[in-house]
Length: 320
Ligand code: UD2
Image 1 (cartoon, rainbow, N blue to C red):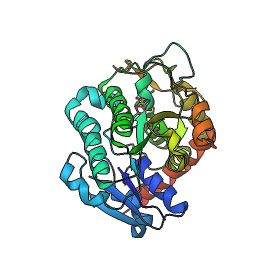
Image 2 (cartoon, rainbow, N blue to C red):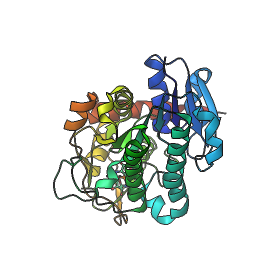
Image 3 (tube, protein in one colour):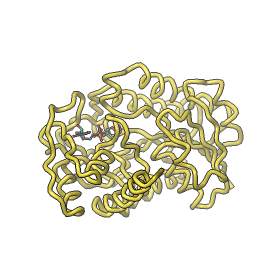
Image 4 (cartoon, rainbow, N blue to C red):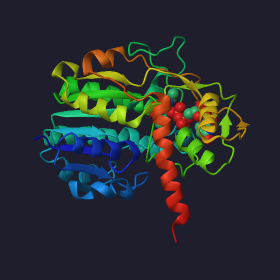
């Protein structure tokens, strides 16, 4: 039986990955999280199967105990958000670059066999051609995009120079249950979910015709587990972790209104600095080398996510 560690394991994607590993046969999973953007409630139902290390990845020394006897490490801990990295660049730099360095160093020293890294589709920037393929030249447009790209390069370099196996997965706008909607930096679909349930208009930045390859969290979890088990030949490489589709924000908001049977026109604001216009993954390489097989259409994922937010919302409204 392999030992797994998930950094950022109390976060939205990290906690889904911990659940996925347990469902896939792991008896216990180690989690490193500083609970800055993650929450212990995300692990509440599986707490007994989690070895929780409350550690900030900026603390190199603090990481060491969590790495002992780990075979595969999933590095999900990060400060996400393009606008956050522009408005407040120091923490995102420290966590996404220095923290990633600390994780790699500690993993190498502890003899971890493989690191699977949460990279970002933001590294592509605005490419002339869609879908975006792994061979395209990166054109990061924000500190966050550059930080995540550097993380990929470090993964590849650590594989080449230090013999640790690494795989980078470029996430394409992951959404699903437990995505925290409480910050202005939250993912747009989590903000849309709470807006529709509260019958409020969301704010769309720009004309709403920008598009994203929204990818359901369960499909990303499945791909991470495949990346952990893939042959050593994939080590040092980067793969798109997307669904392959492309939905505009206007389409997403229209679909939510249709599902809920309401008509609430969105408000429109200025385009966000650093925003990418269109995003869509070419999934071919991930399918070929990792066995990627996304199962959720956008609408299926959206409906499952909306059901989860509806239950959470109802529980919050009826709580004493
Ligand atoms: C980027 C990455 C994504 C992931 C994420 C982490 C791209 C294409 N994607 O997501 O893979 O790494 O960063 O943070 O770079 N928006 C609104 N109203 C709101 C909030 C957002 O209109 O209230 C717009 C925003 O301007 C953008 C779109 O929605 O055009 C998506 O924004 P987001 O913050 O959910 O994610 P994004 O695309 O920056």
